Length: 423
Image (cartoon, rainbow, N blue to C red; front, side, top):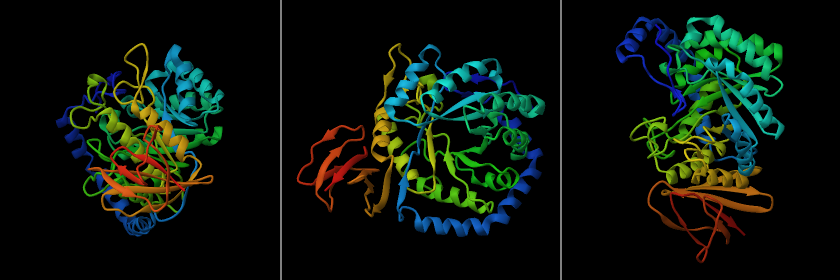
């Protein structure tokens, strides 16, 4: 089954042009692959559930060293590439990801020049390789793409993510066996050029796809495009699962699917923005305000990093009108609240140690130690409340790094996170 591939340049994603009826009949005819998928999960169900119970008991109860988990995806911006690099430097970002689509082979030199600029400024680079339907129908096309990109970029990046969001049919892959046909040829090329493979780049809460794929492909790093509730806060639940539970389950699925322990990366997350029209990657309810986006960015990153299960979190992306940290619709780029929220979380949490989570029915309070200082990051997913910390409050920073006054050691905890430094 093939449909003309159409790219949406405003939202940076394909148009979903396959009719719903055609998608249904394709999946119906390939029911056998779903049987094998179910069998692979049943075989691993016991060890995965055992690990999940173990991870749920330990999450936020053990110290976690926070190194450099906060990362950011970027795209070439032509004459403004230097501005992109300067923004990354201002943020303090040390790790970036760029996407190279298989249908933009003629632009490889553009991507290479941009990659050289990033690496030359000591920003580590991961490269995600994007597919479309023709790559599945014509395997030689995809193999030629891998054979061109990996050797050309191997000296600039040690990490190549194979495929992207392939469990959404608009990205051209219709079942996990088709994805495996994309992943297999990358293995020998990666070995030849001594680079590491990242995958399987599954989007959303579809963890059942991991066992058969991880059994077949020995990825060096495991990736997920892990969204939780695009219509609201990261503490919200989907079928009873919030961010913390999803992270614990995903880690259990990854570790339980093989005997090998591997780092877990989240290579895409964002919240689309209200009022951005055609630039938003989602329509209607999933769109949030700029203030909400900034709040959720901090809260999601802390929930992931403090779990001890996630090594990196890549926000998608720096410059994008519909969801980025920077709005590029006007000649003068505008830094959104989420830009300053990202800058603050990097400056405060990187090279710190998560020391524990304070139990509270209405607030989230995460404790950290850095250098000679103890501090907490706190927020609510609902009404504001006043809270007295056990230690004396030395200073308070708001979500964006601005100092705010304290009142007799009591702190008003709100949806916007605060950094509370204690004596």
